[in-house]
Length: 106
Image (cartoon, one colour):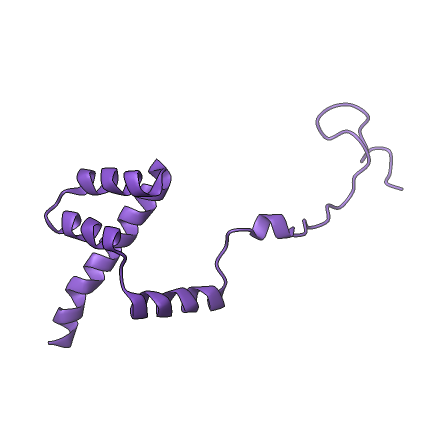
């Protein structure tokens, strides 16, 4: 037991002093994170199958600087604004990679 001068019965720091235990990570907090295996599998599938027709159209819109049209088209195809933003960002990154590839090969 701590000496009486250490334990306060009033104020912000009132009560018996205890050491906090570290919180355990619950499976529900991990939900939605990609594992290494899933990431690799999805990369291979993207490499083999390529883009779907609507993704190709989004890339074409991005090539001619029609970002807003690309977003609206993605929203129409995917249903929500957040999914559309994510898809547009993904397509912009893939477009940048496509532009870098020929430069790196030369």
